Amino acid sequence: RCSALRTSTTVRVSRGVWTSSSLWKGMQIAGRLMKVFLTRRIPQEGMKILSATGVCEVSQWDSDEPAPRAELLKGVQGAHGLLCMLSDKIDAEVLDAAGPNLKVISTFSVGYDHLAMDEIKKRGIRVGYTPDVLTDATAELAVALLLSTARRLPEGVEEVKNGGWSSWKPLWLCGHGLSDSTVGIIGLGRIGMAIAQRLKPFGVKRVLYSGRTAKPYAAEVNGEFVPLDTLLSDSDFIVVSCSLTPQTQGLCDKAFFSKMKKSAIFVNISRGAVVNQEDLYEALKNGQIAAAGLDVTTPEPLPTNHPLLTLKNCVVIPHLGSATYSTRGVMSALAAQNLVNGLQGADMPSELTV
Image (tube, rainbow, N blue to C red; front, side, top):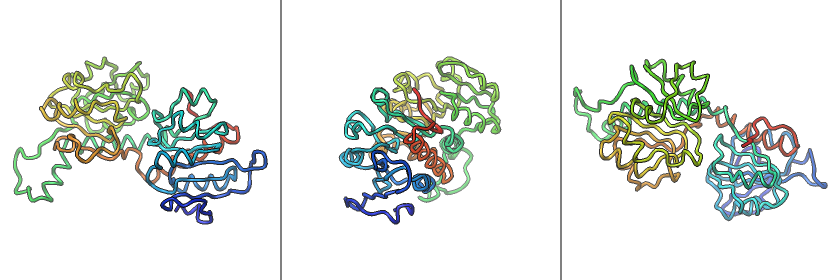
């Protein structure tokens, strides 16, 4: 259990994962502390904020794994505040289960496609999220994944382990380098820009980007705003860092991959649903593109028998974009502060308005 809950009392045991802690000082509603439900364990930085402010009575699904749907629906009942993860689908059913007390949702993520925003807005519920604080970590991971895929590092590690490394060979495990290359970034937002900044020192010749509009700050990386088709045909490396929207869902499909160079490397660190994975599999299998690196998939986790996992030229990692101790700690603190401020009717550090 989180150390902040060591003095908590178990209110119901279901495989040992339900805990509750009364934080007795602070704001009360009709003589009661406000009920908050956490859908997962969170780093101590956030728990300390919830404890110190004394605004609420905290219940949580005391596990690193997601709460089963039935337990989520039970946990939110009567809650004034909800702190959730990107893997928690917060839809009308959850909102109905919570009831009219629910005033604040704080998501431990920058993405919000797991939230039924139209329904949430209709009910006047405020939403906090965690942008900016994970930008650097995600950009670093994107570069690491790009290099690992382009230079075939996972293949090399496997050859060392299985005895395939016999001697130095001129063409064995050759990959693709960044020097003098053209990199295309789909979605030059905070993370896309941070990726471009980190790639420039590698000697990248051109940075292309596409999206809804040109970005004035792209000049910092000599970014060229081009149509998507131009980006696809000219880029040696393509990094997808756009948000998941109705317009971007399934964007990377058969037609998309057919416009790329055969030597091109494809990397997705946005959301799995941006990519048609069946079309990606065919493009990789048939040599239409050179390789792909994925930090996000549909579904997550990707089944171990998924066809993409049979390909040597496809590197898949388990959604590690923000996975540094410091970043997750800051995310936890921001998510908790969003929740507390929302419950108090104050401005949130990061309130989502869409």
